[in-house]
Amino acid sequence: MTTIKTYRNKRNPNKYLEVHNDGHYHNSLKQYMFWSKNPDGTVLSDPIKNVTGDRKLHRWRKENLNVLLEDYELVEG
Image 1 (cartoon, rainbow, N blue to C red):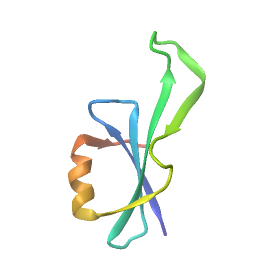
Image 2: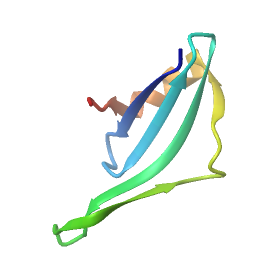
Image 3: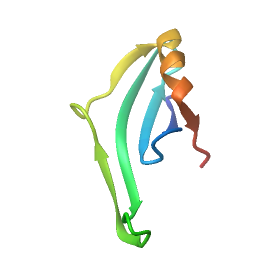
Image 4: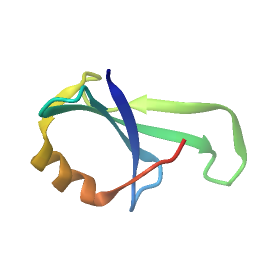
């Protein structure tokens, strides 16, 4: 069973990582940007999600992923 966890960047609250774990040694991840408000603070009626890079899941070893996740915090929900 694949579990998906979402992490938010500590320095840029619009930057996210989506980590897919199938219970084995490798994890797959996808990076994206997400905006729910305009720069002036007004809420967008339709939030924007922009997947960065080549839009594919890339596999990471657990120890390398842990180094990357030092700059991220787990998003609940």
